[in-house]
Structure formats: structure tokens, C-alpha cells
Image (cartoon, rainbow, N blue to C red; front, side, top):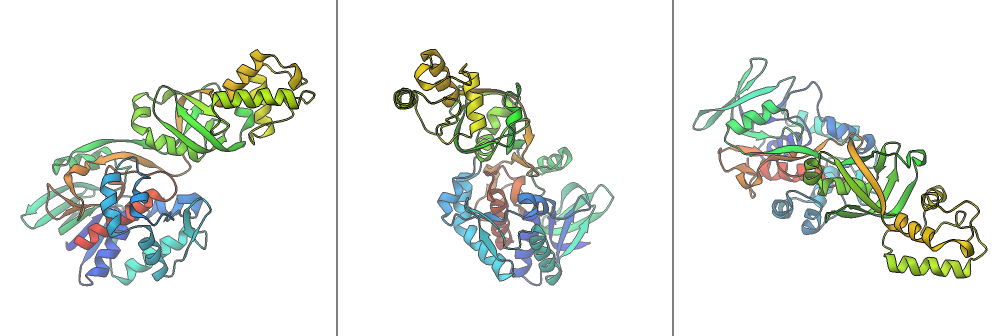
Length: 405
């Protein structure tokens, strides 16, 4: 069976690349091969089933800053195709997007099925063939102009051009045939995850969140600021998830056992905090400390911080010992957590690692090693923060590849 283009991977990047290639060249014979029985799985589960299509950041350079790995390449890629282009394309297909306050963009239907249906409809319109349950076991150069693709089921396909969009969760066998093609694979490791607190001192406060906190990995430069959520297993929320992406390599090396220092106030420094607590002692002498939280910290969390600082329930500001205030300062701006292990963030299975970007032509997404072999999406050593950035990288790299194809 011979095709002009075979796309390996029936996910976001694979479908987007196939659709755009077929749109730009209606005579192209295109086949999508998907190893599982399901298509567009990550699209379906993204954003809690709403599909976080992209992020409302329409400046290519600013957009690229949200990628711990791949930023330099994406600055160039986003010049060709960025978030505003994605929004316009979906709109042209009848899928209108809306902006959330935090910049995330979803279909107005709040249903990922809208996006899945759009892709399936376009694939049908463009007569793109789709074959599921086809696990690619090898890709070989058949002639100087043609490749042969073998599956574990014994099928053999031929293609003039190949778009590899197998996603970041590709198994070892897939990476093996990529290496056989001559490509260097940077070991894929997890990104976007939450932290497991080994002591669980805050477990009973699960569900409490602080909207502006600063999280630092002790003895490193890794620090992020934003909302933090206390869970029954440890710490989550945007600041934690973002930190996990930027520190992914370091945390992998520690085997996910490390120390975190949490500033519940967000930005208060020790000297400022010390002065503000001293002022509280003066102006609120008769008020109970435990009953009067500061810095917009939720009452139950404030009470726990007071307890850890050995401040009794009935203690008033005018009577508190300096030793207890010193402990409260520490717990407010350097609250320690010993993290041991991680938990996947919702259904967002994101990895960093993959095909070395040095081996990819940025202008075309074509392999520098194998002519007419292209790459798109998470199979590349590209990953972004949570918030629609990983899909955006998939759309953009797939578009550039399709344009070249």
C-alpha cells in the first residue's frame, strides 16, 4: 500500500499535520497510523474534558517563554504559526474559542468532543485514511525516494514522506526505530506533576488554596509564584505544576525526593514581615493571634501555621513571645516540605525529552538526517507549562511540517 504521506500517531499533532497537508495539496494521499484503538486521546481528556486548545498569548516571543525545553526553536516556529492563527483556524471550522481569566482558551461548548469532531470531520472531508491498532515496529529506507513502514501486525506500507507525531509517551520500541533512523533520543522523563509530601502535616487541610504563594526548591535556583493547592497527598496548583516543568531534569535526578520552601505570603521578605508582626503586637494587643489571619491566608491554614509556631489558641498579640513570632515568620515565608514522589497532574501525561532538536530543520520540521521525514509535537524535545502550551507546540510544529510537506 503506497501513500504520498503517512502520519505515525493519531493524536493532536498527527491529525493537525495530516489535515493541513491535505488542505494545502488536495491530491495528496494521506494515511494516519495509530497504535491504539482510540484516536485523539489526549485531546479528549485535556482540561478536564473541555480541551485547553491554546493560550491567549499572541506574541510569538512571549509565547515561547513558556517552554522549559524548545524555547529557542519555537521562537522561529511561532513566527510562522502561533496562538492567534490556531484560534482563527478553529473559528473557520466552526469551533469558536473563549478566553478564561488565566489565559487558557477552550471551545465555547466547554467540550473536548467539539474539537475531536472537528478533526474527524475534516479528515473525512479531505479523504484522509485512518487505521487504528497499527503499532509501527520499524521504518526503513526502501529506495532513495521511498520509505517502508512495518507494523507489529505484519502490515507493510510505503510512503514518499513521513510525519512522525507519536507523542511523548512513545514506548521504548518506538524510540528504538527512531534511533535506528539515526536520530539521537534525549531520554523522556515526566513533566507537569504535583508533589507528594512525605510527612503529610497538612493532609487534613486538603482543598485549601492560597492564591499568591512562592514555591522554591531548597538549595536551587528553581522558584515559581502563583496559586498553591493543598491536597491529600501534598501540594498542587499552578505554581507547583509550573515548577515541576522547569525543574523536571533536576527532580528526575533526585529521584523525586527533595525539599521545598513555601512562602505563603507570596512576596513578603523577612525584615518586612518582622516589622509588620511587631506592628500587630502594638495595634492589636488584645486580639487573639490564631483568630486573625494575615496576608489573605485562609483561617484554617493560618491556625495550622500558628500551631506549628507553638502559639496557643488563646494567645493574644500583646503576650506572644518573640521566640514564637520568629517561628511564625519561618513558617510564613520558609515553610518546609519534604517531598518524596510525584503524582501525575490530572490526565496531562506530558514528558520532556525526545528527538534532539539539533537534528531538526527549524524552518521545515524535517529531519537533517533522513530526507522527507518530519516531526511534530511531543515526540520532539519540547514541552511547555500547563495552560494550553503543549497543544500549541503540537499545532505549530505540525503546521510547519505540513507546509513543507
